[in-house]
Length: 471
Image (cartoon, rainbow, N blue to C red; front, side, top):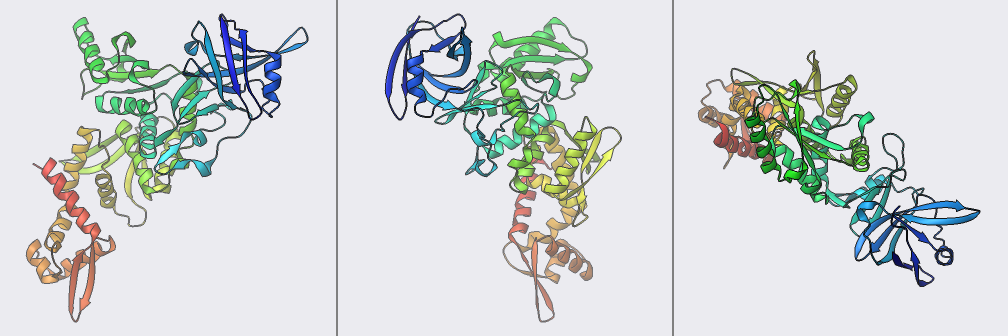
């Protein structure tokens, strides 16, 4: 095989022709060619990363330095998946020094997007080096110890990243001893497809994913075939990527008799990079909204809603280890200002009450306002119905509905809300003022109430959800 390599530097524009050994996927750089390149302070060191253009295809390469009978030899190793036989034109587009620091918290964000080039840490959770090669708006992720690379997009929406991190925290494979793949499992097609859509925006489409199905109970050939067809049609993953079935009690599921879908991307490089980002989740939280987005993903994966006689009583989340429980509690109390509790069956009562107000209803209103469980219809409906039935919700609605177009006095509120006690109405309206739902002005001996923007937002949320969910 003959390869011509054109190497562009600040000093010269050169072209050399030499032989390449296809069996071990290496391009050997001739000494005179290498010396001309290194004149421009571009010294090639072991494990340096090159981005090449071979036959109009962007390809990653790894520099390897060896000693052959006292003569220094420098080669470029190319992963098999990127190598193609025949005459090849090679252009070096970029040269990345793996020993140079790249991780920079001050450059994480580009508007509403995360710049993954600066966000991805220099080392993974085991302390091994992570290499990132950049070409225009694409990144090549690699670990110098492994001759593999994954190509992804450089920029991703911050909201999408936070929500997927929440999902993966709940249902993803995060065992540090088995970081060989990215794996996510759930029994809802909406959550599986949300996870796959995220990686597709990064450039890792469905054809590269594998799929397993977890079943429990009585399993026969007809059920297996039906479940297989169901998940292949929902995920659009090719049938050739179907790996098989898993049979275990942990996949018991009341909401989907088709079992649990397990999607897998076989790449230790991507798995290490993704888990390293998750270990630094707080670096991506800029405000309370960001924290709620992460919590929404976590709740959709592992959360639950408890009701008594149709009334909302508790919202909680499952955890596996004491360390995980501590992280959840600290995160929620720090960013959302919400008190948490722990139940003996490995569930955290995440939304007990607000630390400032001591009111549990305020938390439930936030859950509804931030559209938590937006992709989990069953839990979402349960949350909304319980919230609409809550006594405080109905009282606030009665008091606010007469304030939409004009101001009102205490007697006006008593008439529209059908209350008889004047002192009770005044007390309620003062509580609503503390919550920012109304404003109160005293004119002579009368109290005048006006609805605020927050109050109008409450009415809008109440009426929209009442129309969608209330019987």
